[in-house]
Length: 444
Image (cartoon, rainbow, N blue to C red):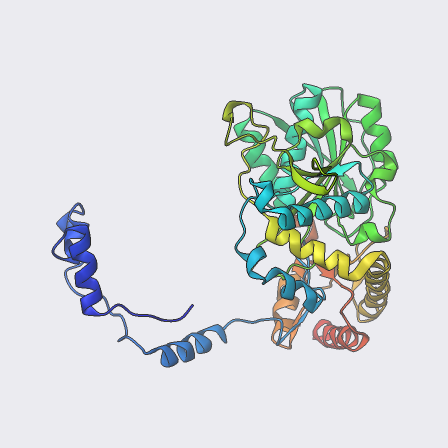
């Protein structure tokens, strides 16, 4: 945004228009004892060129991925984004569009949402998918709450190996609704024992792959859900589903996930994109909205908002969710990404991720670390170090390696453990460099 300061005449004209004599009159309701008695120590104003230089110098105090190699994941990943994505979503008709309530004026945008839903449903192996979910964590919380509505039960069973931030969001939602969340313990980084669950539980929630990168056994989770008459909710990595059997193949009732790996930059932790798919029988209970395809009186294909189950703009008391924003720009980015790669491209990304992950495990364990869990993994794995994971992370960061996420803050038993992520764009040279520097650090 260009830097356009107000002139003194601009200020005078604005004050005259709103009917006050001075800027101080705008703050007349603030008590005198709360007002500053002298000007704060603020540097003199800068012209536009000088201001840009100042902001540039401030930004260079941050560490960014142009200066370090990223092995940090834990929900947001450093992945390749085709230039096609930015070119399409920066077009004015997409960048400035809001919720397409008027189908006659929004056919292009409605079609992109329809295509997004279709691709997500196919990727997850489900009957249908919706649009306009905030992110993966709120999608999971909405799915669990939806299950309590369906089953008329007030308890939720959540695997302990689910992302801890997702569990915190779930706790925030359920606290306000007087719902109880029970944790299913993990063993060797995976969920294996469902014996403590009862018919009081509305659903079982598992992550695939889980927070530690371990691929959960969804067939066992489905059996456990059937035993107690509960729904199976799966938090699934969309990239992993390009190579692993999708949750729908295991009979999952609701599948949610984070769409950031599908063409959305890491940013500063956002914006993100929630994915939400389910069986057709639950279509009228989902949050968000669904765009459908139809034909007009002349037989021409057209797109329209088929379901808006949140209904916050019509009958708030009957809404299934209070989600009321439109994530369609991020959904468009993911749609362009999946279209650009195609089925073979998505599979290639997933295969490259597996190959790079296995190479990284080999090199990093040879450097002196141990693999904490021995289950099959996708994209992420946990290393156990002979010293503090925080100290190793900090030491390697100074050497240009963002080594991963220390897990001690999430689980005290994993104090010396590091969650490492490897995407399709990590090179052999980068992994070798990580291993070399890790070996030297562990030897100190």
